[in-house]
Every structure is written in structure tokens, then in C-alpha cells.
Image 1 (cartoon, helix red, strand yellow):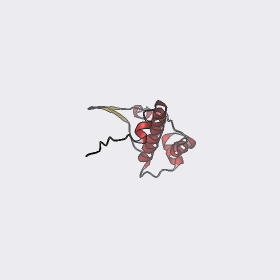
Image 2 (tube, one colour; image 1 turned 90 degrees about the horizontal axis):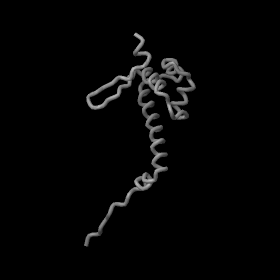
Image 3 (cartoon, rainbow, N blue to C red; image 1 turned 90 degrees about the vertical axis):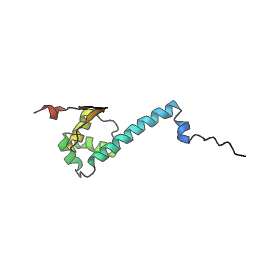
Length: 109
């Protein structure tokens, strides 16, 4: 005789059903994803905090706080400056449509 094995939901699957837990998880995950994205952008680029801040036109404390995770929310303009200092450009993609995110630097020709 076979036992009826119904798969029990994982702890995460149970917890994510709780609206308060889900909201906290989503907020923390976004912060984690931002830190990972910033780390990936700087991979192979050994700029010091001061050098990156100068290249991005930001205060060194702002860059240090982002790198350390002390600042968990970043303005889009600051993110773009850091991305450009690492040689990246931001683009929005929807299917075959690619829209570059234009900043001050791109407009000043």
C-alpha cells in the first residue's frame, strides 16, 4: 500500500503568506539586491572610495555608506553617477524596445 505523501510547504512558503512578513522580506531583498548590484558593478574595478566618489561627483561618505550597506536607499541620480563611474549605462528594456536612461552627462555634448 502506498502512503499518500502530500508535500508540506516549506517554512518560507508558510511565512510568505503573512502580509507583514512578505512586505519585510521584499524590502530587505531589494536592499540586498542593490548591494549585490553595486558589488557586481565594481568587480574588477579597484577604485577606492575616494576615487569612486570623485569620479561620480559624490561625497566619499555617501559612497562608503552605500558600499557598507549603511545607506539602503539610493537616489536614481546617484546610482547613475556610480554606474557611469564604473563604465556602465542604464537602459530600460521591454521586449525589443530599448530606452537609454539619459543623465546630465549624456545631454552635455
